[in-house]
Amino acid sequence: MTKLTRDELAKYIDHTLLSTDATNEDVAALYAEAAELGTYAICVSPNMLPVGAAWGDTEATATEIAANGPQVATVIGFPSGKHHSSIKAAEAVRAVSDGATELDMVIDIAMLKAGRDDLVEADIATVRRAAPAPVVLKVIIESAALTDDEIVRACQASERAGADMVKTSTGFHKAGGASVEAVKLMRETVGDRLGVKASGGVRTYEDAVAMIEAGASRLGMSSGKAVLAEAPTE
Image (tube, rainbow, N blue to C red):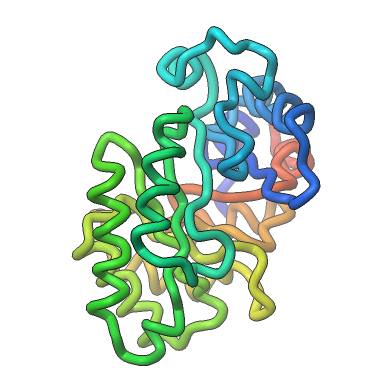
């Protein structure tokens, strides 16, 4: 198993809080904790933005927040993906104006399963146009609910639509979260052209390292503090 120190592993982590009862105080604590741990980003619900307001600094701009601490990610079309593309686009525009530097959008997997890859691609492209680079766009495909062929097609549609990363899971689907096998297949499909985010069920140091060894370039987890406590310091 690859050995990653606590500081090395922290740079992979999106420190996540998407529970329905999360408060502004919880987000403030999450951001402070993420800054202390050195995680790459936080990921919170859209109405928890702007983060500056949530943690009491209403004067802080999105640029200042990003420059002085973790990146700020939020979710789009979450958790079902069954939102009109125009609504997802509107969410994206609002999220960016509220300080998000990264967007994790959910596709409608029923479209994919119906063979309508064109509609999946168009959905992603609509959000990409609404939030162009340098905003980072991650596409959540719910890999646990897909066949291998569907995983490949979802990744291909994401790449064609201009996404920056593909992501395994919302963590809310009954089929489950990330698996090593899915991450490997996603990495094989996108090569080094896109990032791969493993999310959902990554709860231990061993889980985290296994996902990275499989090809994950980012990890979404709500238990980041506990996982980093398991990692060696040097």
